[in-house]
Image (cartoon, rainbow, N blue to C red; front, side, top):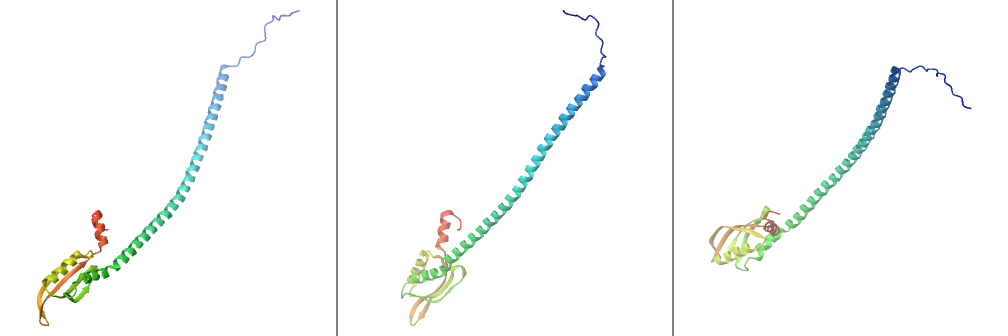
Amino acid sequence: MITINLLPQPKRAKVSDKARIIFVAVLGLVVVGGLLAGSYWYFDVQVQALQQAVQERSQTKKLLLAQIGKANQYVDELKAIEQRIQVIKEVRVRQGLPVRFLDALASTMPPERLWFESLSLGAGGQMNLSGVALDNQAFAAYVEALRQSPFIARVDIQRTSRRDVQGRGLVAFVCSVVGKDPGVEASVSKDGTHG
């Protein structure tokens, strides 16, 4: 058997719409507040991580700059050492030049036709000569031979005159000779600048 209850159901108290709206509003505020707090916490963690990365990279940069400074100091020291070595090489080359200058003067001198009375060697390869030659041709040949030497830059004849020496009419001369480094001359001719 089936029984059907036809009696009216007891009425429930209606929940007011205001309470429901307030509940939904409070619930919405809690959710939005939770979302804001969560996003604030998330971005705060991200900012802290980025600040930590910036600090680490700043420390790494300081260390690298210190190492770069040391490396630059070593490079500067090496350049200074290379310059010193270059100066020493140039001094070694140049210290033999006076001997080369004198050799150029002596080796081009015609034997028994020209004699030096005085010879002085100054700074920069400047040489002053005075002497006598058998004749003008001997002196001219000597000057031309000097001008052909790779160690002689210039020959300037200051004066020539006739002089009697033991009854012979010889040619007295005074001249200045400027020596040069043939290595410097070669480097000038290669690139157009002094080396």
